[in-house]
Amino acid sequence: MKIRVRLSLLFILCSTASLLVCGFLLLRASARSTIRSAEDNAVSELGMLKTSFSSAASKNLDAGASDAVRRSLLVYVFQSYADDTFSGSQYILRRGEETLYNNSGYAPEVLLDGLERNTVTWQGEKLFAAGIDMDLLRETYQLYLIRNVTDLYDSVARLRLQFGIICAVAVLLSAALILLVTSRTLRPLKTLEREAAAMGQGDYRARIPLSDRARQRRDEITTVSESFNRMADAVEQHIDSVTALAEERKMLIGALTHEMKTPLTAIIGYAESLDRAKLNEAQREEAVSFIHRESRRLERLSQKMMQLVSLTDGEDIVLRDVSARELFDTAKQTLKAVADRQGASLSFVENGERFAIDEDLITGVLINLADNACSAGAKHVTVSARERVISVSDDGCGIPPKIVEKVTQPFFRADKSRSRRGGHAGLGLALAERVAQLHGAQLSIESREGCGTTVSLRFEA
Image 1 (tube, rainbow, N blue to C red):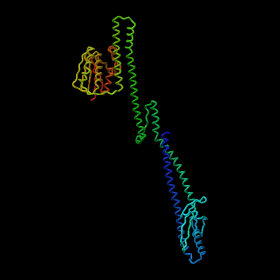
Image 2: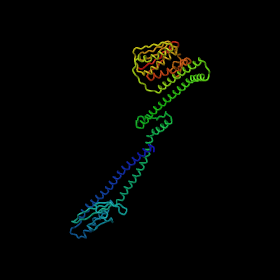
Image 3: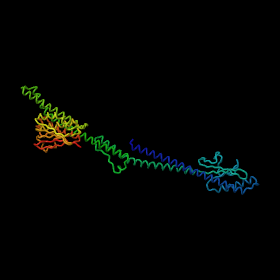
Image 4: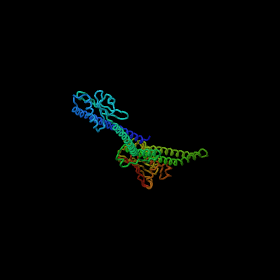
């Protein structure tokens, strides 16, 4: 059962129960008050009859008269008062067990059943009976009032029926209103269900529209809708980043496959020559040297590729306060080996600067940049540090201005023939830029064709 149906039923049941309870109590109190008022009026009428009859009888009765005369006179006076009523009540006058007057046709002792006042159902009619004693000429008489209150009880019954009809109409109207209000109030939940289903099917642009009025209300449903929209934004951003990462991986793998195809083909060709062809010693040495050189190049290519992939995954790095001298001392031996292999000189310049860095990553960047510089034909490479900047400068061939912005792309090479001869795959600057991003630094390249290149890492303050 849907939540709006459950809530509507709950509201309808609660409102119906409240209406019935309140109406029942009010109707009951009103009926009791009406009946009690009618009974009290009848008792008051009986009291007034007693007073009037007692006064008139005392004036007209003679103490010395015979019993028959007194009886006749009492009946006559009582009848005059009994017949003069406009209330529709009927009266009974008794003395002991003797009934002197009765225009009701009922036996009062049966109706009263020992009570002073009582309401009973007699032959399908509601009768109210009340009795009172009266002392007259040293004798005790009983006055009784009988009133038919069937119409009063019928009016109460009609009132109950009217109340039932009114309650039924009110319940139907309130049910319709509750269903309408609940449906309108919970409409954002229906939208939430639809948009969540769309998101589950891959539509990460799904959002719940919120009007300015809804935002001003700031109720729970609006809060849930806003939370869903924020979650959808986060999911979409995450999906976009994952998609972009997957596309980048796809491009990297495709580029790596392309890069590995040529050396692998050559290695396979030389290996088949060694296995099947009769080669002299010089040819064998050339083939073995080529296989070794290309295998090492493939090894370096795979290592750099793995490093680039791990950095792209956003692995956390630990920054440590390192002095420029300590950093240069760590990289100096490897850098000199790179420079000596290319016949280049190497110098370091620092003045006690300190940087918050991952030493291993920055050392790798310096080695890559120095290796690139030597491959570009540099005769001298300078590694320097100044305030918030670490630079590698060379006097090599430089980079054409039109491709400076492209050299940080994976597998991009300005001079493909020279890069292949030097065993470079175009990953060095891509790694350097990623390392700079992880450090919150900016990688900048300044180059003049034929004059040299300077690559700098500028750290934030």
